Length: 139
Length: 146
Image 1 (spheres, rainbow over the protein chains, first blue to last red):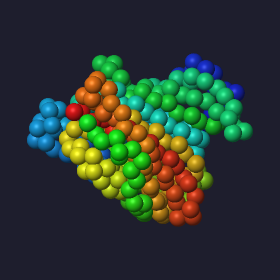
Image 2: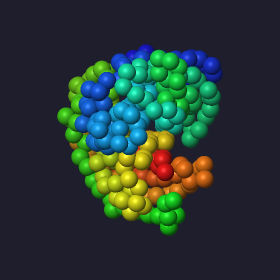
Image 3: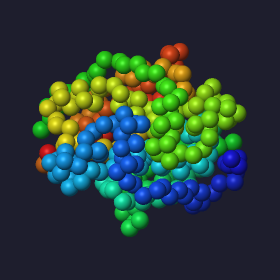
Image 4: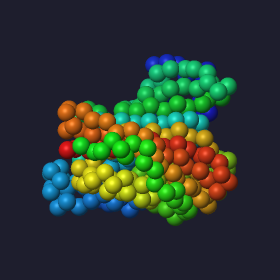
């Protein structure tokens, strides 16, 4: 991984882009098993229908995991100081998520040089599913 | 409406092992192909003790605890009515395979919008490793569709 330095990064840069595979029922089954989140709204269509959702929906944390991948594809994970996401829309089977990140702020905190990156996860039709940000420390 | 008396509710601490196989399974599930997350040699070359847990994996271990289900049951909220509103992680130290992580969760707030049609349960969790080091803090906001 190329070393990203504080001086090489400017506010407004968009260093993060990642597109996941389309979300399938298999994706949700694998994520349920691996994550330990067995809420039936993600894996049991009968339950999801009874809950008024029409079909199973993706785990919000699957979307945040893609967003996390988009950050660790840019800087080493050890650089991440915080990571937050609001889940703004339901992700459904067939949605393909693209994560993009923009440098919003450069700062110094706790004796470190840090940048705040705003990260958006959106589906193929542009609907924002997750809106978040990460604070990363850079050398 | 959820009784606001539950603000401040705590659940007993629970401890879980961070397992290599589980981390590899998680990497597969999220499409992570960086060998740092699946190959122990690559992880060590990158400076980790063993395979590191990806940034959001702490939430998964937290979900192994009974805290969410216990809180929902106490509040009388059916699982079919909840959605994940937001999630925040603050990182202090890496979580790696072989670690034992203890989670302690507290209900820090309960609010509502739209005349109670939506309620928001905020839970704050500390994650501490086998050495007593605070490795991460987690905050989840659960949305209840009334």
